[in-house]
Length: 304
Length: 195
Picture 1 (tube, each protein chain N blue to C red):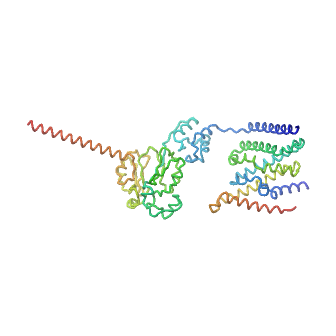
Picture 2: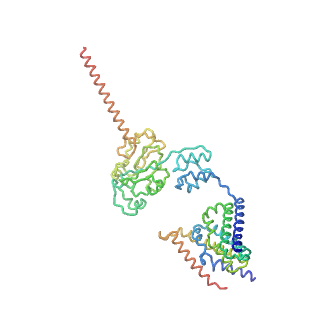
């Protein structure tokens, strides 16, 4: 019986002493951790994508609080996160344009793209482009091995029935992981407000790129767009039209004059329809006026 | 002179001949886990030296002056674990306060010293070998030094292995296991030492 009592007492006392010792030590060696860091870390998406330039969300949270890093660096978080961080830090929220991935090549997916040969190797773009400039006829275009889709942590890139890569602009956070994954630098992060894009990255001469492209979206460097643009926002450099997104105002004039479908404007069709409608209306009015005029002359003739 | 000789003998025994990691196979988790970088290996080694020395001291005192007089030797394991856990907690607090960078690089392995069987091992071996107080402390210290030595050697080798051209299947953990095995073989050579 006494052994039982002694063992309970001994361990109990030991535990008590250690507990008190630790409690004292935790007071003495208490480390102040700024609660702001924890709060910001909770707000951040915790995707640890590294788009902010810091190794992970926790590091960024710390940098914001302690090193005064910019609060608008979290691309996946978007405006919501910036606002909340601003609230915690007591700063004005400086909103940034939400950026989404634009794929500057729409050669038509696995079915339409012209291939030089049938690539049957490791299923990654990086390996595919190593063999005689890649399987496509076009040495600049997408090889459709989907490194970018695999790189996307937000389920924002999908492959459609045709093998084309579709960016889900709702889900895309603009983190840029796909752009880094793409060995041909086809993907660019562009503000979601920009509508007009050049869907070609070929720096080959017009005739070559036109022949190589399977979807008639090759830029043939004809420079019609440069002449059409009233804002000096599109230039042809190295046989390729490039839009200066700083200057572009989404007017779509370049898309209207482009002889191929290289310049994409979702409103091009709408505008064309409107134009056609307006033309039809004008013609109808013209017809009416001529008819009325004719009637008037007829009446005048009768009176005279 | 005899005393110094005994200490030297003990140092060689604890560091090389009866090395905790490579000969007794205790504390293998941090040996593989924290040996990726030289810096953190050094920090971990220092923490283990400290904890092992302190653990030897306190467990010996507790055993000799508390458990033996009360005939509670059967409580050895649980009392030692309690002591070691508290000690590790204390070390963690001190490191967090004094060296935040080291605290971060050690990460989860610092609390894991609690379950590092080298620490419990040294405490129990002290009692089993019937060392006196001084030698129990020294055994803990030298055991920790032996652990640190092996950890640093391993970290040095692994840092070089990072840049070595290896078959993909051997990269990382597999080659580390092989290195660990070869190191154990090499340390086996010390067991032939005779004084």
